Length: 194
Image (cartoon, rainbow, N blue to C red):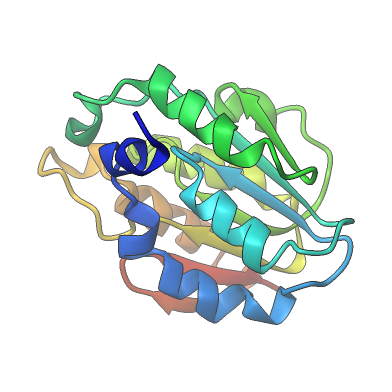
């Protein structure tokens, strides 16, 4: 099976819902040295490839990708073979020397991480408590003036607020309201840390 056929097998949710925000809010960082980006939840690496090709072009800048590549209980994941997703992801990013990926739970990575980041993208566990935990554990890792973005702010699978990210994101925003400025709110939510 060729790459084109394989790519079509996995939906490019990034192009459909997030790429415009990335272009709008990250383009001022393009080519800058010593940037650190952290992505929680990577799927096939569509956002990774875009960031590596368009923003993290300086050899001293790095992207850290964290994902279990096991999927979740979301309806959209039921028919996806995540071992295939992982193979596809690694085949796409292995040519970039400045991306490092870890196949583990975000909580396990964040509990021991000490680096500071210019940008953190949260798109892993979509439960309310899961996204809140990812945000809280990431907050101290985000530099002052750094950008944090949450994917799927408006996503709802119709199973109540505990199984959607919005209420967890809103709880995080309320808790840290004096420490951040919201810069965009649509399908995604983007903010800058004061």
